Image (cartoon, rainbow, N blue to C red; front, side):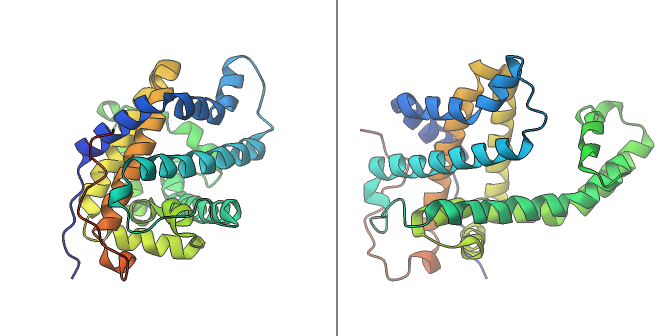
Length: 260
């Protein structure tokens, strides 16, 4: 039976804000580089045939941002770490790309039945027809039934996303491979499923608001939630004995310790 674990959403966001403000000189420019394709489109560039290149670009920049977030967090909260990580471990980028492909590939495959139920087709272009989902107050009975069945069909994908969300940190922090990082993430989330789900819902809403505000919001929302996610990863890892067995324990000083 999994023991109950504590996840503080408010503390994680405070931590994310503190570190983002302190390291604006690297986190915000890194986020701008991540969103360069979107900026180019807003400036009139036609990137319709560059889908794969955009994915590879943002995955590579995302790798760096994640690694950088771990470095910053480790520097600020070194006393809470169970070991001194050597970042980046050899082959880090390749392992991260593999684990990211596994995570998102399985997630998309898991959501495909929901797409079929909602749009009536299996083609990924069906996502463009789902604008009605954002107006639940205007659904008719048929749309409400379709949404309910789609939510039920997407339940495995939802579980996969929550339990596997922290996989990248185990690639960066532990040098683990794709599947091993998924297993480590699932072990960390076990006992904290509902708090982790709430955390993901909150950071999803923050990033959605940031996207709505675009430059005013996303270049702060993204790094804040990235650092907040790093905080939650460290908190879950600290409370998961199987992941730190044999490591030297230190007096508790959680990632929420004041930034010096």
